[in-house]
Image (cartoon, rainbow, N blue to C red; front, side, top):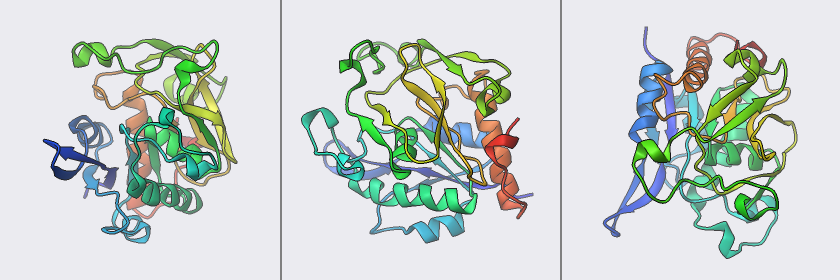
Length: 259
């Protein structure tokens, strides 16, 4: 049986400050291929090259990846400031309507870091530009120095809602995660259910109420060693099952059925 096609949202970047690319981290493709059992397909997130309708037709599910550029604040009604950092307006133009279309259709997506934030904005929510500047909040950013192992090390707990989809999927209410983000949810969008929190109250896990399909999204980076990590593996496995069901023409797998 053919593997489900998973569109991995690519990020625009320059190699050697001059060669433009649409790139996806190897660990994203590995998590999709090895754990979700899907066919990874990197998507150039640029409306001049692809359309949402075409992506919905070609792909069975979508991994909304992390990325250094942030969602432009105009997408949630706020003015741009230096704290908002860099942007990728092409990605905004593709992913935000893609999320809304997937929610309506029941087509599965899994949001990670920036992808988690995109889901919230797509549903009408807002973001804090810099979590670490808020009173009582931790510094959730990636350590500036060290090895990849040190940067992706487990750094704080996430506590899930009793009986919620993340609790059921993990078999535990508390897990340890990495943290490599600057922004975070300020106000949840319509139907966005905050299902997991960091110790400082920062939202870390969400899903969409009433959506017919798989909509789990997390603020951390589960793609890091996903096949071996006991928190990452069930997320990518559940996403893969939802994408396989979509590819086979079965009814969508909702978040209430993930465990």
